[in-house]
Figure 1: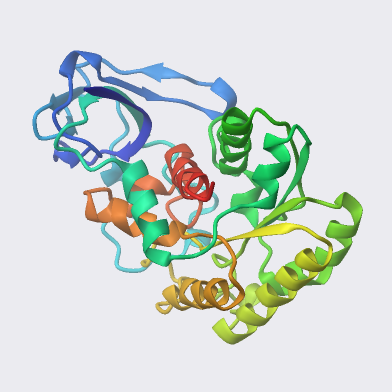
Figure 2 (figure 1 turned 120 degrees about the vertical axis):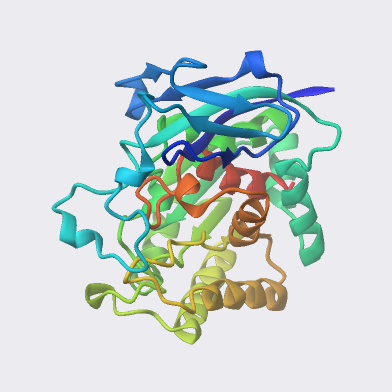
Length: 332
């Protein structure tokens, strides 16, 4: 049986082979593009002229004279430590990122969606209940998205591909119901700021379902975000969880992605916040979308962090947003 992989993100370096997510690919189905936001600046690259594919092993590389941007030209490439502020805004993977679609044979491949389900099953936590029941009964559900810049949908090529939009559409498809999505996320925010305005957001929208996603900024060692300790992070998340439940809303907690460890502001102990959130989910019996676990699973399957981070620091590509959505979709 054949399956479709769409919009897999990748940066290519020199003429080195890079791993695709799947092997046993149908070579003549491969499409490689570069695409600006909302469809601007779309470029389609040519097999043989711009790239070569090893279909059986699931690999791709630039040709010698490829029109595909070379990741070796990135100011971050090969550095053990970098500060994005040193580059006057000329940084990130925007000139180098390509998006690849293809058909592959399912047999013998470990599917990303199966990995997501395995992770959720291993946690042994509750899944969504009342929101799904409402949708199945024909009642609309108001879904409040709450978090930092990732939860504003940043870096998704199309707004429709932000993780929360993918999740809301899937809920509607599966249940036949209607999801009214509202978003109160703020870029650059930590849970320290988020907890201060959460009760007002809940009162304003009276949601049936809330997803809360903080962590990337909380563990950041930057002066204007002085890092939020795991204990303080826990306190904030428990407070927001309690306020949402008191208002009758169902809650999903979301662990943060894996940031670039070479960025000077990445806390080496960044996994501690995700660990704390897992403990909160277990203690309070809350559905958890463990994005960090899936992110690390993708790395184990051959993806590099720079393939998944469009700014090459801490913002997901469109494929990265799909990883978030895949974890959320295991909860119903």
